[in-house]
Image 1 (cartoon, helix red, strand yellow):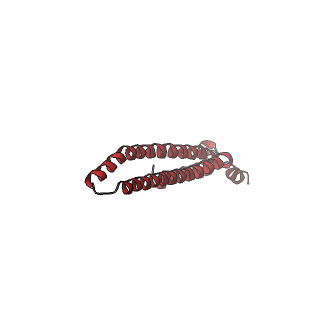
Image 2 (image 1 turned 135 degrees about the horizontal axis):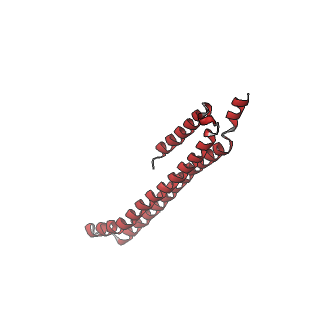
Image 3 (image 1 turned 120 degrees about the vertical axis):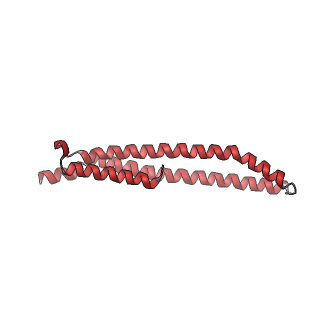
Length: 134
């Protein structure tokens, strides 16, 4: 799932919730707080979709990597076996670094969405209670 789209959806949900609370849609000012629960759901969906997207990429890489190594050895028979092993180790290290980086990025965005959604969910009614009672 695209991070930009995810944040746009979360902001749109928050704006819609704030607008519905401001106009007291259905005589209720808790719409902004309710939008927080939807933002939490967006954060969870983002994490799930990112996990499965990376799982598929990882499976393809694992399936194709042995073929790439075999093709490399076949086409370049004069390559030293040590050099092929070093290339393979560097490729595996790069794959691990890429996977770790993607996991960190996903966790960062998940945390932002879940914390923001939870705060809005828990305290989103307060600003509108002050407007109505003031």
